[in-house]
Each structure stands twice: as C-alpha cells, then as structure tokens.
Length: 107
Image (tube, rainbow, N blue to C red; front, side):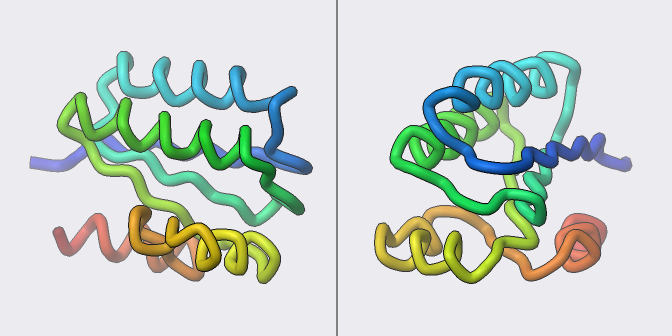
C-alpha cells in the first residue's frame, strides 16, 4: 500500500504574517488525505517564534490525523534555532528532500 505524500515549500521569512496561511495549508493537505507531509525549508531564510509555533501546530495536526510530518533542507540559521529550542528532537529533520523521500519509501 503506497502512502500519499504531499510537499509544502514556504519561502522567505516564516513569521506571524505567514504562520496562519501555513497552518491552513497543512490542514488542507491533511483533509485531502495526505499520509505524510514533507516541509521543505530550502527557501526559508528565517523563522521567528510565530513560525516555530506554526510548525509545532502543523506537527500536532498531522499526528492527530495519524500521519507523519518531516522537515528537510534547513539552512544553518534555522538549524541553530531548532537546536537552541530542542525542536531538532521534536521534528524529523533531513538534509534534503531526497533523504526524506528515501525515509518514507523505506518505512
């Protein structure tokens, strides 16, 4: 049985102005039947506390629907934020989209 994998690729700064739209996008993908959601942060330059809150809310939404949420392609500044806030222990973070896809195929 193959799983339905959907991707989100936000860009720029993930802050309070984009957090609501991001949460809505994740909710829509979950409602459409996505089993796994890959959030590709390659184009994100900075995440503030609102953006981090949106990522946590997305994780809760996906998990409550029985799905998986994976994050990939974070830059060094976002990686440091994840480490300082221990979010690197909360989220499954991969260095590339290909690494995420391989993980999903092998699970």
